[in-house]
Image (tube, rainbow, N blue to C red; front, side):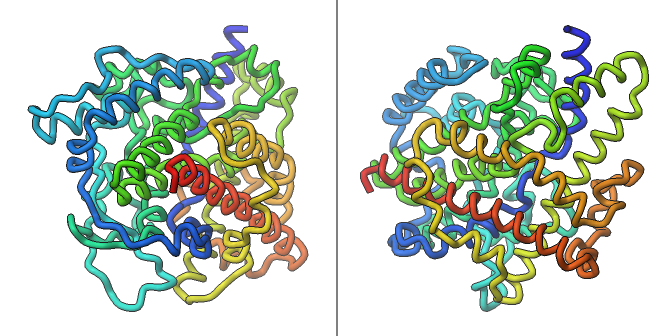
Length: 447
């Protein structure tokens, strides 16, 4: 059993090297929230630095972070308790830098997280060039040369629309907040945070280290959990609870800018788990196949496992890139596509339970995991064979050279129609769960 767990760990390690879910969350979040009255009718908010919020609410934040830890211990499977020395304790005499560091330590996020004052303008409504903020001021991670993220600086005292704040923050957890948090990662903070060793993925690869916070394999078979219990060690539920309760506190105490910004941070993890490749270990593959592939690998024949890993990564990336290109192209052209409409359509919102603490696990990830077979079959039938069925091709290494919209322009109309319908369905879930989360946070804030 230990050998099997090791083999499954190696398989997951390679799979999790693709840590993105929906590309630039901000583009999709604008579409999901742009017709939601609670967001678009909310009054503009005054921009406030994080240090000002932390200093003004130090005592209430101390109490909240203590309650967050108690909730996590009581409610989350395989949760490693936070070391007592990392608890946030109010101290009005310390410097802003020391207070911010204590806040990062208590949340167990990367202490070099920027938390810059910025927005990503919506390309669909932008009418003139805006000032640009260098990406390194916003993220600790390198951006691809063709990245769609464009940052506009804000300054304390500016007023800004809540939609821009929450949509911009929805992409922010991919800017380094969850990087190198495990004891075998190359960081000092990982050695003090108490999360243990990285449960899967290569601990030396920077993007791999965030995967256990952005993926959640919460609905696998009992056989897999028995063989590889480490797949339970994922933490998106922790992040949703931390940021959603911080949002409610900020709203209640008169800091609406941080109310909307923390809401956006919480949305990121909800949105990640609407992606089937983040909610299940190997979409389209049975437990029996996973066990068989790993059994073969254990006797030194790793070719089948390596091929499976490459195909999973390629399909994940191809799906994400196609979706991102369609949304960006439609925004730049100031047009509507079926994907834009699906994100905005609120008809499904009330078909789900009201948002609650375990909404991510019981509603979002359960639904996404159920798409495993369908998404794999649709991608294989609809996308160019070389991208999704050829293990000799590495999509990640060639991603910047590939334009999925052009590649699919010559696809069989019926196959492309099925792909577009499925992506629209997934994004309708993305939109509905995003809005339900916003409603839940606002309700908890008495707004």
